[in-house]
Image (cartoon, rainbow, N blue to C red; front, side, top):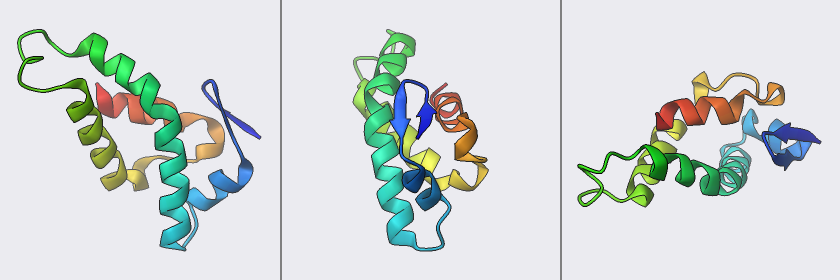
Length: 93
């Protein structure tokens, strides 16, 4: 089992992230996103400028971060080295 910050990630999920099978890849991605979303939401809430908080909710920003991360998933690197969380947080910033 791998540590993904404070999350425990099964080796099979990590393997599925790099699987040639798109369905397995998407399922693994969903598991990681669901696990990380609460922490990402806190980061976004703390960094969202007051000036725009009435026009865009933290949840909207989170959805955009997840979308951008999926589009750039090829840049993620090896998920076994714990860089996934840092990578997606960098997209949130």
